[in-house]
Length: 475
Image (cartoon, rainbow, N blue to C red; front, side, top):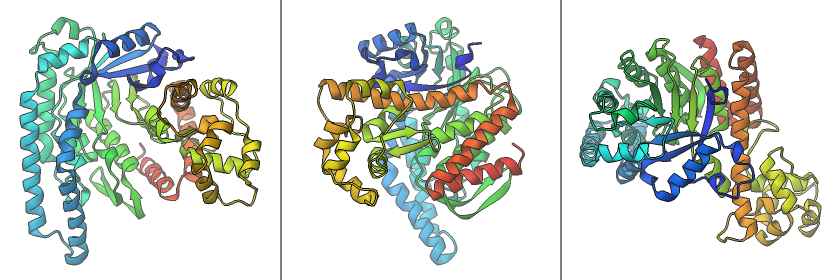
């Protein structure tokens, strides 16, 4: 077994790190290509990455399809969710008309998803997936569950029943088995890659149900979809786990809690079958750390996201000094200026960029008349109003703009690379401790504690709630 692939993060083929002018291509350990974007140019990128040692994962392109469908129903779905919350507040229960409209909307979404599935040419999908000569392949799937979830219709306030999604979980299994058995062709080629069976769910119970449907030896790996749950912007006061409610002292952001409960449900449903696991759509550094512990007994764990380079473009940089956090670059710059310091990073991408485009923090501080008594918010506003000075004196913090000049080309790679580097360091720390559970737990929980101390209050409390769940159930 390749040690570096025991716990690995995959970027997307459109990451600027796959461009030829990336000075550190060896940092990229894995790349995912969706069949939706399989072209001559993307295949050339993937071939180059594979030749340099990257693991290649082939996705089925359904995230694009399900997102497109969800957009059509999301507004009305989220309005129903809000109406349900108000109804409970005013009437102590959800009124019959809200429940009726929810049922109608779910039926409509189910029908649209069914029709969309019937249009798909599965032979063509598989053909495109195999063109990149992948190591892993995400299997065919029914995508009804994540669409319904993204539209807010499986929110806990509705007390959804897992039995109502069972048919879609079974449909995914049937599609996967047909694909595996060569029903859609390419049986010999498919036999040469690990095929992951997708598991869709919305909470612990539905995740456990989905995993319990798997038969021994049917699946070669399990791909857990976080597309629906991680899109949540809701706050919750309780969560049901192992048939018992875990209550929180205040409302907490749902994504980290629901993601952790889904992983726990999958583990319980698999009944100690430690299959290869792939997590679809997860770019949160702290949650990746947490999964390093929750999935510690699975020999192969991979995770994919586009967030490292999309966050970089949006001005979010990943840090590890105080804790593994996503940081607003304007806020980082503001604190650095107020403290009369110079921003540093161990990332080779940052160091390389800084050598080519050196910073002068002290000169910028003088030009903007920033002192130790300056207000952070005021400094942020001043920086946003002086982008030209940012580019001149602290070019690494330049807001992403159009252009193909040398600075902007290198900046795209530098910030995306530095974010990827932070995630890869997390994976490395987990890999070197995977054979020593006590050491792994110590490192993970130390990082969780650092996060609780330094993250925004509610998100820190959400991590604390997960820690208490782990301790309570001896997970």
